[in-house]
Length: 410
Image (tube, rainbow, N blue to C red; front, top):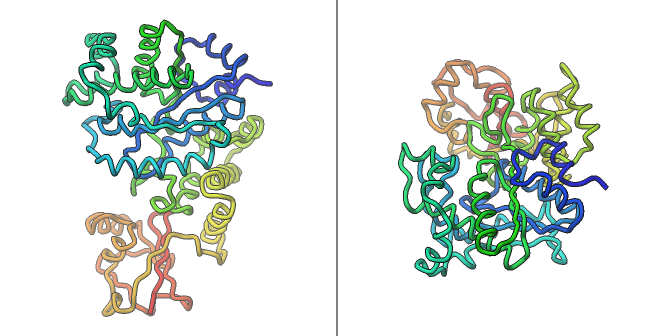
């Protein structure tokens, strides 16, 4: 059987390792308990988390035991890594609610039955810590001079780093120590922006327990231009269908740049690498088939096969003049709201296609808004009842690929 380290390497996951040969050897001969931390700073996981969830699944399929660590304690401080300013402070109730939603999303990919995987919350040991004891037992092992050279802190020194956030590395390192003691966890994994924090935990276990622990980081999910994937004009691409509809989720992957198709198939699906390379090598119009496979596979994984088929059918209906547009994002309006006509700028905001009237004006002036596939050139354009089809539907398009269905209710 192929070593999971080689699988992750071949598929492009691995960015840095504290002990490359030792980790590969360990994963090849033992059942390893490992962990990845997720701070519940929102009420849903997003596309940026998906890569790490899939890496956990590869590890679990190879017989290793994942620990999904929910950062109920660390989320109350906030990780400064990759942030230009301090995160918004959340209440304990918000964090607990977010953590519950995370668990449901993890279960789509990871099997928690019969102790095949573990989910724990670091609030269990962080919230009741004695601060003086923590400083004496843990803080003494960390050099402030060295911490300030860490990338996660260095980039914040110019804009301002709070003492609250400065504690984050100690807390994450302490998590690793706790998981080592309780579950025999010897490997921490995470995004490459977590490298400094992971090293902190590896060294803390060595100093306190005299034991070997290891760290492994993954590439961040970025486009070929180096921009983070999973962001649109409307915001993040979430895994919760209430925040990002199944159709919008499907369409995001259907519309990725040609140059990113092979990378996304490799990192975010479980298709064999031979098939990934074949699909990634398609050129011209043929690459669209690879994008459809990518979009379907990911939507099926997160939202189920039925929703993936609906999203696929809706997309094809729009692009190939089909008839089933029921899964296109929609907004209901009433006859009363439409009385006297509704301005296009107001309707764009009502549907969420724009966040302001000024954005709507700009899009119309640039020729980016279509009603019934006819371009809108007048910012004072109004929608009336007679504009809706026999089924009381009106299709609006923003740019080339963003569709929204307006439904008229009596």
